Every structure is written in C-alpha cells, then in structure tokens.
Length: 605
Image 1 (spheres, rainbow, N blue to C red):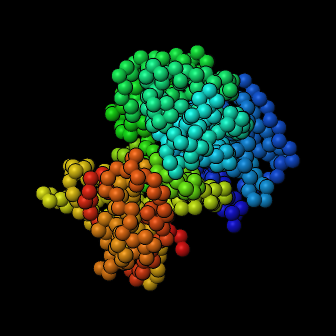
Image 2 (cartoon, rainbow, N blue to C red):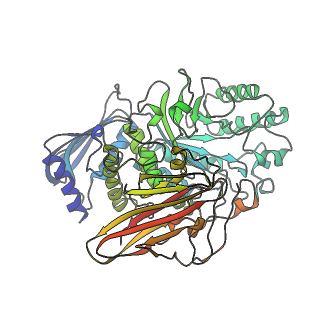
Image 3 (cartoon, rainbow, N blue to C red):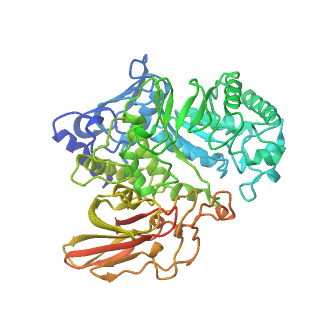
C-alpha cells in the first residue's frame, strides 16, 4: 500500500507536466524538508546498482549544497562538502521505498539558512548519551545541523569538572533532579563526534551568570562576584582544554534572566575569556549586554516590529515559541506560518534559527518529554521552514489560523500530508500522538462581565487568548466562551475526536489540572445536537490544579502525567446522525495566567 501511494504521488507531479520547486509549496512528495528544485523523469521506479559521489567546489549556494540524479542504472551525487553528501544520503533514504526502489529524478538542493538548530536542556533533566544519540539522529534525518546543548541550569552543572568537583557533587544540586548525573569529558567528545558524523555541530551552553543556583550552593558566592569569576575561569579553562576548538568552535554563555551589579563588565570578561580559547560566543537576547562579535539568540515571542535587532548584529531566531510552551498540535501551524528571521531570507546577520525544548518540570521518564511537547513534529515543521525560508504570513497573526479558503491554509494542508506520510514511514513512534489539523469555521461568542463579542474563527484548535486580544478583551478579564459548528454525516455513525479545554505549558505548569469525576477542565462542556458528552473516567480526579507559577516551588517537582494533557488522552466517541449535526463547546477563563485554548480534533478510527 505504501509503495502504491508513493508511486501515485510521484505520478501526480509528472501528470502536471512540469518540474517542481520548493517555492510552490504544493509538492505531493514525502521529502521533509522539501528540496529546492526537483524534476521527475518517469513513473517507473528503479533499483540502480551503483552510487557515485563527487565532491565539488562550493558556490553561492554554500557548502551544504548537493544534487542527486537517479537513473535506471546509477545514482549520482554531487556535493559541495561532507555535510552536503550527508544530506544527499538523507534524501535518498526518504526516496527509497520498502522494496528498495527509487523514483527517477533530478534534485538540486541547498538550505536558505546556514543554522538550523535544536536546543535540549540537560541542566534540568539529565538525558544521557543514548537519548542524545536519538535526538541527534532525528535532527540529521531532517537536515538540522546544530545541537545546542544546555549543560547547566538551576538544578545542576552537567559537564565533568575536575578542578572544582563540587560542581558534580549531588549535595549541591536540586534534590530529585538526576542528582550526581553528568557527562564525562570522554562522553562529551563522543557526543560531538557522533553528531559530526551526522552533519550536526554541537554548541555546548554553560549558562552564566544566571540560572546557577547550584553554583551558589556549592561555593557560597554568585558567578559574577570576584570569587565566582575566578572559579569560572578555571572551569572554563579546563573545559576548553579537554574539548578543543577544532571539536567545539562555538560556546553559548547564556546570560539571560539575571540582574547583576556590573552587567557590562561581566559580559566583557566572559566573552573575552571564551575568545581567548578561540571560541565564537553565543548569548540570549534579551539578556545582559553583549558586543557585536557574539551571535544573539532572539527568544522574544512576537512580531518583527517587537524585535529590535541592530543592522550589524548576527543573530539566530528562536522567537517562534518554545516547544514546551504551546499546544504541540497547534505549534505545527504556528511554526509553519512563522517567517524565519522575520524576512524569510538569510543574510550576513540573519543566520537561521534554533528550536528550543525546555523541560522545567521534573521528568522521571525522559521519553515523556519528547511526547508531551510534540518534539518530532516540531522538528519537521521547523526543518521545512528554515531550510526553504520564505514568507507565509497571509492573514495569519501569531497562533490564529487563517480561513480554510486561503492559499496559506492550502499550503499548510499539503505540508501536513507530507508529515502524515513521514510519520507512517519513519517516525511512527516519535509522532505517536501527532495528528494533522484542519480549519473548520466556528461561530464564537466571548462574554465578559462588561462586554459580549461574536465572530467567526477557523481551526481544530482555537487560541482563545489571541482571539480575545484581537477583539479588545484584556488578558486579566474573566471570559466565558461558546463555540459552535455543524458537522455533516452521510449516515448514522460514531467518530473519534480529541476534546481539549486546557493546554498547560510544560514549564510554569499553570493549569486547571484534572477536574472532578464527570467534569471537563475549566468548567467545560461538550454538546452534540444538544446532548452533553461526558469526559473519560479520570484516574486522578481533582488533582494538579495550580493557578500559580510553579517555578522553583515544590509543585515543579511533580512530573506531568499523560492524563494532564488532552493530546495524550484517548479520543471521545461522538455519535452523529445522518445529516447535519450541531457541535457546541464551552469553557471559562477564570484565573490569572490561564492558557485559554479549546480543541476539537478528529482522529482516525
């Protein structure tokens, strides 16, 4: 069946009688990211007996450029460097069907942006080498080329330190956070080598002077003090000696979310210290003031007008939102409609982007982090956007879906078709809970104590916070919401839907939690043709209700369970009769900081 489906898709391109390019955004091909240019030569799939690889000189398309030509007898790869050859092999692995056959085609491919990264926070939840190998493999499969390794955060310093072994001593680390776990220098070198073989550069992050509670506990002084700087100087010197610049040319020094007495002085000292070891420095922005030799990682979540970037400032874009913050199903749309680096095009300063996976809440089963945050699907859509670039902002604001009649949504549907095939062929386990989104029209009513607004909105998931702002309702106001649509059915039937009334961030954990037995979260209701539909039977009713930020509080140490996240739960059976059926959902925004989202998403039977 898979082979027939792929053959049909390639035949559809040929039937159009023209070559395909990534700019069209409508390819039926399963490749992710889509190649920049592709021409198909015939319907019949072939099994070439040889593969020739030629390394050519880089040109204006960069050293990640590659071409592939597949004919009946041979595959010919031309690559502008080692990484280009690796990407060509990744493309071939996606083109090859389960019988080992390939389509006959020619591809010319290269990335728009030189940096396409993924960040993992090991400081808060220690993953270990096996898990990191898995993440690096995933990155390589979709041509992401930079692994930002956040090695330190409030709970612990995760790199070996011989000159100050207190940094690895569990007594100075946050209790219950993988105490005493760290990577030896041998393991760090092995991870860097493993990544390099797969086209990925590792950028370790040693966050300073903030995010460093463990440091104060171990030494009794903050990093920015004279005593702290002296300790850091020895630690950084040892790290750079053990992990030389040819293995690790860049080091991220963090520098955000901290207030110190001499920010300019500390940052000048820190940047110069790393550069004395031949390293390029990266920093967070907003953060402490840095010079224009450092690459800024922009983490503001906003429009280009809200992001002040100097014309002589190199930067990478992490402003599309963090994986751990948004509804992971809606994030696919949010990322697809994001314009990389605010223009969609690379430049001397617009270097690309880094997708971030923070895991503030303690996790016992580290695999839960991947699924609870939709990591695999997030990687695919990020890889697509930052490989090809371009703008996709038609009628789109933040996380408000455009109408299903727009070209933007049609392109989004086509991309999700590729994601669905990719999931079936390669990442069935990693994307176990991902499902495509559509843009049905809802009639929406938002009511506050002083106002009532009615409007139309589109999407299987509605970001009600964003819609409320659009219609002038302040974030502090309590709101009641009712949404209504019709579903037509050809016969009496039962269909499965995910119903979501709460979408908590997997960071600050602000949430209405699991409600009482027989109730939906946030005073929610679901009616089909006027009849109430009951939720599933809750395993932990009346629990995990945190109407406050849990950072650095005991509640942050309670791991997320599947039941707390609607996308991890079993879908609800919806009984439809022949003809039109009325679907209505309601919920309330009733406490500060609440994520005001509603979801009604059809799942396959």
